[in-house]
Image 1 (cartoon, rainbow, N blue to C red):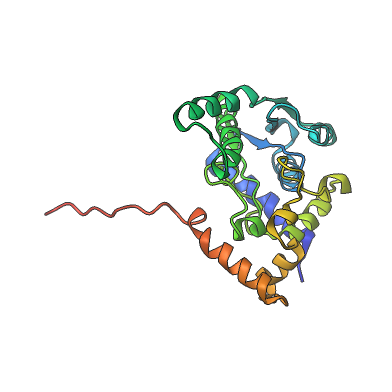
Image 2 (image 1 turned 90 degrees about the vertical axis):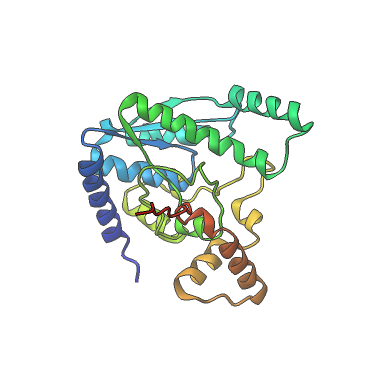
Length: 246
């Protein structure tokens, strides 16, 4: 049985200890998307470090229809929040690539904004003596629903061993209102939810991860295939082991 209160307290203590060892006095820099993961991470960092040591960074690509949720989270937690719009940077990179390739589209274009946002987070972090929070969860990592060197990066990762259902439970234990915990994630591209894009629900995925049970054979095969294809995102970079001659 998952104990959300205990898990929340354990994560808070882990964050506190990690900062004592890796960034005494540093701020936690959290990219706020308005979704449950970044909201929960921000709340846990506030409890661990205090509101003065948490900085929320909102990074819309032009107009973001739900950015008000992030502003409300900043107000709810009492933390500092800043907006860094990546629109011009995104347009500049896309324009340069189109000069070389004629057109720039597909997954490479989809993954560009998350990578630009991570570059912004590290620039902010270095400007405020911070450490960048990774906000990924186990469910999305399991099937590769993240961007390598984008939202998959960071200095510390409080939620990467928790499923979506567990993250939500921890968020409630942290005292977050339902509007932050239960907000349906949308890709921001074509208006589809994350579950629409995946082709199965997080409830189904989470049960398979924790219990090994998936009643639909086709869904099980799809999850297994996605997991295998995306393992490279979670593993350390392969390095050639050079041994000098003696």
